[in-house]
Structures are given as C-alpha cells and as structure tokens.
Length: 115
Length: 120
Image (cartoon, rainbow over all chains, first blue to last red):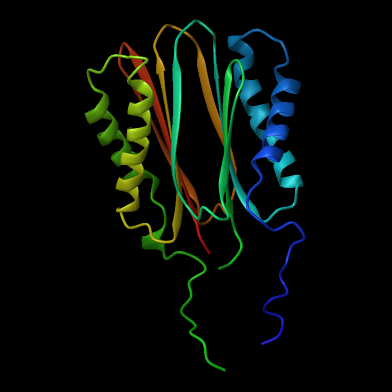
C-alpha cells in the first residue's frame, strides 16, 4: 500500500545524549553562571533552566516527547543521590544526566514514532 | 483490504495513567523502605537504585498498558540546606501524566517522581 513508508524524518535514529548534554550545559551556565545559591532566586532559576532546555531540545525537531527534571541544591557538604529506572524502548528512547556543581539534570526522551 | 480497526491511539478512560493511585504506591513503598533509615553515603546509591526499580515494577504491574515509565528517585542528606527540584515535560497532556511524593525524616529526604507517557 503506498504512502505507508513515507513518514521519514531526516535525522531518525535513537536519542543523542551528546547533543542533549551540550544543550543542557549551555542552559545551566547561562542561567546560573557563577552565582551563589540564593533562596530567593532558586525558584526562578529552576523554572528558567528547565523551560529553556525544553525549548532548545524541541528546536531540534525530532519526533520525541521530553521530560526534563532539574534539582538545585545548596552546597553545604550534604550528600545527594539520584537514581532512575525506566521502562521504555531502549532502541529509540534514552536519557541524559548532567551534574554540575549544584544541579542534577535528567532528560529522558521517548520516541513518538508509531510502531 | 484487510486490517483490524481496533488499534487504540488513545487510552480508554479507565486505562489512563492515574496519578492518585501511583502516588499512593510511591508513598507506601518509600515509607516502608525509608522509615527509620539514616543517611549513609555508602548505602544510599544502592538504596536509591533499588527503590527506583521497586517502584517501577510496582507501577508496571498496576496495569497501565501501553505506558512508558520513567521513575526518578532523589535521596539527599538533611543538613538544613535549601533544595529545589522542578520538571517540565513536552508531551500529550491528554494521555500522559505524572505522580510525585516527598518523604522526610530527620536524617534524609527523598523525592520520587514517576512519569507515564502513552505509547501510541
């Protein structure tokens, strides 16, 4: 039947962790840069980082759903651990974790291509 | 032309990801595993991984077919520091949803977020 194979995006393939890494890093640096932890700003920072990241990822134009989470913590010597467990299609979906001095970022991406 | 016309592209109302139910599961599991536990830097990595897997299995078996799941567990030590965690998602708001829960005792805090995304 014709027309069934036509949906083909130029950059198919599984999720690229390196590109996401670069985007995330740039976002964090542009929002927080070298600032110190500031209780009043933290809300604004997390919201801005996450939204900016999401818009940049979407700009890539890939057929993916995105979930971006960001945790910002003050450095007091306390420990923080983050773990994820995902149930998805390992060929198409992937995630990228990014840690910087205070922030831990996770971007899982799930393909929305039909089977 | 043959072909079945039963391929669902939207979940039925009963099969949608239900945040309230999932939040209950998370709450139970975390409370059971973390009550009375003190933050120990050697054990916590393993604890957070096993908690994530445990929650993922529980939600998977709750019968949300066709849902891809992402479970994120963050455990941190309580030292009076400030923490803020937020997330944004680009998805189909009609079919996809998430559930989260926070647990605190005086030595640690634990945030769990479960995201469910419908697989068309």
